[in-house]
Length: 390
Image (tube, rainbow, N blue to C red):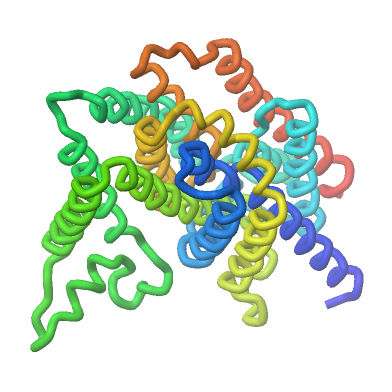
């Protein structure tokens, strides 16, 4: 490999790590625990520490699907060269920096996806219409589905005819059932999930079916949460909120790392010295550092907005956030964590009258998302035409 090529690979890698830092310091590092901090369930610094570690673990163990989709699933027929990867990451990071500076909510998923498609089309690639259909469907259904689930939970938790020692354990059962069916790379040899692995460790050659393991996990989760709430309602709700925040932080790492390292994956295909696991490890480390160094300030700012939610509305926000993030990971679809969280906040807000839901802010946010996708696509196409596709 020539020195110039090695240098380009190095610049692309550094750009990817920089993007990972921005993601860790931004929405994926700050959003998951902001509701818990706002509800006084955990301190800001401890939240930054925990979210960094969990995001790192999520990136390494579940980040492969989204990374592969961003790296090779958005454009057919071509692979981005190092200069194209650099262009994608600089466009994405640049637009995010503009958003932070101006106060407009620019989402990483929209900028990176648009930039990859724009650069790929300029290089003669073909659109991956099937993948675009999946991405578009999830992006459109996220505010609808996430908002509806959050609305339903927020309307149910305070109802006197549905005691919280019943409703919250039911939510815990749902979450527990989903957790044991999450796919992890390191469990690939035993079916990929905790449910399949757990069913194979029975003695005397016996095994449990996946539905049975799932049911046992759901019942165990419900019983633990019910016992905790029965002895201390306020503390139990806060601890359940912390558990949800942990799962959302883990899912954020799994879904967002692909936006930083996905464009790198095709560059190192076929090179045993740099396997995909090492790329995910580097991306996870970049997000970890970003969470520890940049997230505390964002968590403090966001927690002030979340403080008015309280633990019940925060739970209503985080349950659908966890479910949607894991659907995105399973499908290998890049998704905006801001969109996921905002949909939950709006849904839970409408359940209590919607007094703190600003229509103007929502319209500006949606327009900023659409605009960032269009601008990133146009910039990617233009930059690639001028400097890459030569």
